Image 1 (cartoon, rainbow, N blue to C red):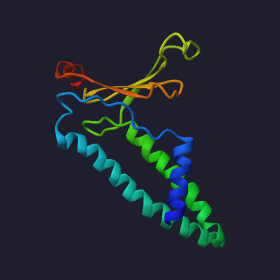
Image 2: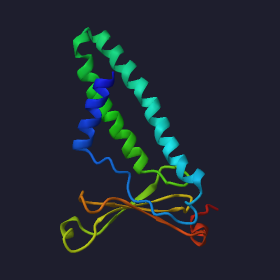
Image 3: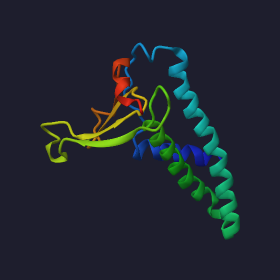
Length: 158
């Protein structure tokens, strides 16, 4: 299991971005519990995905009758599972851990040299906005913008 896991993590590191984005420290995020809750949530997802993938690939290869193919199936499954875990973590609010909603396209992808383009997502609770660049680059990753409490009145549902 550890060999397949190591290979899947190596392939993930080479193919997909592993960074979770830029989250600046502000007054609302300085509490230790708020910052550590994101990492605890990520660790819990990883801890749940590991046995699911291991048992799932073992069961499927046994049903299919291809026991020698279990390591290859495990590598592919671990890769896609970790990719999902990272993508899901990137699309969550760092304060309330809810999925971000209402994606809005900003800019034009053809203007990537002159202007910023990408997608903006928001937290329904009014905690902030997430900017995701349209073209992957080594210099710009996704960025989180915290909103102060004065913005929360716009997000309240009546």
